[in-house]
Length: 286
Image (cartoon, rainbow, N blue to C red; front, side):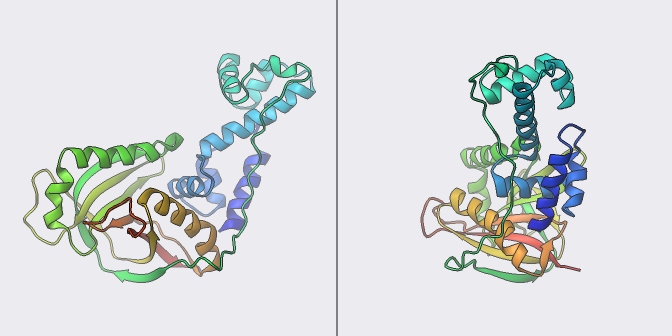
């Protein structure tokens, strides 16, 4: 998987001065556009769009400083329709205008090319199990979320805050099954760059709380990981290790199916003893 990611970075670097479509980049890594963008963010901490933008602006700055290329030509070359939009983005990254970048002695910010390496962390075990689970249903609330510019990273926590504050999660607690509360990513739409995020519990009764929707989760094989510690830090670190360490070292790859996190219903999410489960659908590599 990391080799495929490296090939996708090679493709980006070779086409910085051409149109770069996210779906074309994802195909190189044998991923859907949605899964590639999410994986990219988990591994790098920046969105795919942000990476491409910053790499283009880095190379553009180097060209402006080393040649007499016109600002408008640099703008068009690196995907900007007007010098004004180029100058705005350029100033945001470099803290100066494109014209000022030509001045001798100016310090330009460089956003380096990414490289991916398999990390060997033998001292840190990854606790996981492979589970074949039949189809089931989730009841709860749903929010359509976009991955554009990493907006999902702020929209999802805000959704949790809203449902915690308005009492909805409290109303669900009596219905929670063995998996506890769930945060489910599903209904991925590559074209629109959106997915549905469901906050809910596994459906165990026909007596549903008012206002709940019902979502079907298909039968699948799941790799289930434990993320121990305060939830935000532990979950993010575990997602990163899944893609950078676990997938490259195993005979599995990501399946196109819902992914979810399972939270103990009575757990303190800030505790060092808190354990979140991450359920990822997988298939054996061909």
